[in-house]
Length: 133
Image (cartoon, rainbow, N blue to C red; front, side, top):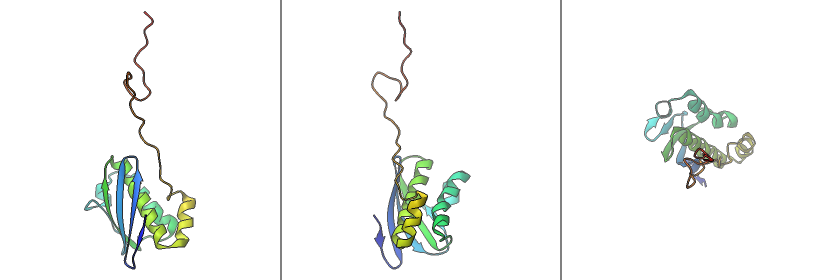
């Protein structure tokens, strides 16, 4: 889950098919995702805001630098995975923050996945048009 050091905390987060590994160190609040600034990696404003929510809920805005490595899925799933990993790292850094983040819903893994395509159908739920004759 989370590895404790005096300088660095590591955590893993998941969302859909994305997996994020995060290193959190004390700093000025920069977030780096796959070697890029988070603002250039995540284009939409909603994703940028979602990245800041765990810090705002914990009240530690600008105290930690985040270095994230994300694989799999699309940008939305990757953003959710980074948020989950950051939340777990914050919870690992301070036991008092764990209750705050848990109440805000950041520590629970969002288990919603894409439903698989079934055989004899064009999609997961869609059926081919029925013809009586």
